[in-house]
Each structure stands twice: as C-alpha cells, then as structure tokens.
Amino acid sequence: MLPIPPSGHLLVLTGAGVSAESGIATFRDGNGLWENHRVEDVASPEGWQRDPQLVWSFYSKRRAAAMAASPNPGHVALADVERRLGDRFLLITQNVDGLHRRAGSQRLIEMHGNLFLTRCSECSRPPFQDRGLFEDRLPECEECARNGRCALLRPHIVWFGEALFPGDMERVQDFARSAGGDRFVFLAVGTSGVVYPAAGLVHLAKACGAEAWLVNAEPADNGSAFDHFLRGRSAEILPELLGVA
Ligand code: BV8
Image (cartoon, rainbow, N blue to C red; front, side, top):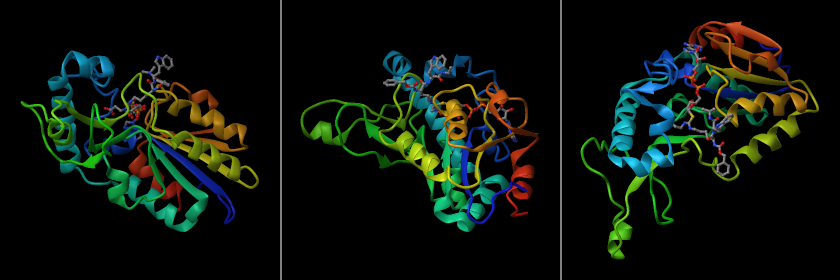
C-alpha cells in the first residue's frame, strides 16, 4: 500500500492507460496514429482549420467508444480513496472519456477537457453537455445563427498547441504547496510521460516534498523523475496499492 498516513496528501495524475482496461484505445497503442492520421494533426487547431469534418469524425468515434465503456477497478479505487482522504486528495486527468466522473470521482480536474462537452468556436457561450455524433455533418452554433453569423461548434477539448483551461494548473500548484508540510505522495498512472505540461507535474510535486510513484505498463518518458515504479496494469495494481482491494 502507498504510505499515506491519516494526515497525508495524495495527488494523482492519470493518462490513457487507466482507461485501457475499459476498452478505450490509448494514444500510443497505434503509435500515436488514428486511421493513418497523426493524433497531433487531428487534435490541433491546424487540423481543425484544415478539415473540421475529420476532427468531428475523430471525436464522434471516441464519444461512441466512451459511451459504450464502463469504469474499471482502477477508476473505482481512485474514487474510493478520495472518499477516505477528502480534501487531502486531488485527481488530475489527461483523459477526456469521462470515466473517472462516472466512477464517482469529484475532486477531479479534466485538464484536457471532456468528450461530452461542446462549445462554439467563435462566441463565448459556455460549453454544454453534448452526446451528438457528427460523422457526416458539421454542427453549427444556434446562438450565432440567431445573430446572423455562421459559426461551427467544436469539442471542448484542449488540442496540441492550445493552452490549458485557466485556473487548472494553479489549483494543482495550490494543492501541492498545501500538501508539502506532511507526508505527500504524487502518483502517476497509465501515462507515457510525453505530453506537457502534464508530464512536468512530477517535478512540481517533488519540489513540494512529494514522494513520486509511477504505475505503468512500461517505463515512461519521464520515468527517471519517480522514486518508485510499479510495472503492470492499473486496474490490478491500484486497488491493492490504494488499500481498497
Ligand atoms: C501547451 C486532448 C502551450 C486531445 C491532449 C516539445 C517538447 C515538449 C512539449 C512540446 C513540444 N512540442 C509541443 C509541445 C507542447 C505539447 C506537447 O506536450 N506535445 C507532445 C506531443 C511533445 N503540449 C501542448 O500542446 C499542450 N499545450 O503546451 O500549450 C501554450 C501556452 C499558452 C498559449 C498557447 C499554448 C496541450 C497538450 C494537450 C493535448 N491534448 N488530449 C484528445 O484527447 O483528443 S493530450 C493526449 O495525450 C491525451 O490527453 C492523452 O492522455 C495524452 C497523453 O498521453 P497518455 O495519456 O500518456 O497516453 P499514451 O497513450 O501516450 O500512454 C499511455 C500509457 O499507458 C503508456 O505508457 C502505456 O504503456 C500505459 N498503459 C497502457 N495500458 C495500461 C497502461 N498502464 C497501466 N495499465 C494499463 N492497463
């Protein structure tokens, strides 16, 4: 089990590997390719400008896959330990599939957005819940249409080359700084450690006194920054590691 005494803090970062055992493909499974497109090309403002229908097809397929998936024991274990630690726990995920929330996680930051939120690419209307599938048509903003403008709706996702949502990283920094006094554990699970700023969080946590653990099926790009590495499947390791088996 992770050494988290009653007064300790736990900061968790998850990546696509946590959802793999729910049947959701990871980014590097196909060597970062999706239907022969580089993910970075589809999940980017340039890709959106170049071919918005391809982008909506990419996200529609992932929406459908996420709707058909269920949380696995790794997601459930993280929701359970949150109930035990309360405000001494924070989960930040790179995943956009919504499975942490469906497993019951509430102290959760979806740093790269969520597949089931859509927003206007032009106006400032807030993102809204959307389970639509747009494989062969492009959704348009009704509010812009009412004002005589034509604007496309887009997934509320942080694409490569886009800034994270305001406040998300600050919330993580505040948590890490508040955690530094007592036993503070940083746990990264199911991530290749390739994408920034997520892959830099281990350095932030360690600068605040954290002991860093990595649970992953293979060594990660930023693996040398961790104090402990448990190689294996998150759905199997997390329940035992978090003492909720
Ligand atoms: C920004 C939404 C600045 C899309 C995503 C060069 C060097 C360093 C950085 C950069 C660089 N060039 C560009 C950058 C910046 C760039 C970046 O990091 N690029 C990478 C490719 C080098 N970052 C950005 O652009 C970020 N923004 O920097 O903004 C800025 C500031 C101000 C103003 C303007 C701009 C934004 C990054 C966000 C991109 N969006 N997601 C979508 O999901 O459709 S990232 C995308 O990759 C997903 O969120 C995914 O989660 C994430 C990371 O991948 P992983 O989660 O780690 O998944 P992966 O498949 O790689 O690995 C899975 C791991 O699990 C594997 O290791 C596998 O072994 C393991 N595994 C598998 N099964 C299991 C398992 N482990 C345990 N159990 C299992 N069962």
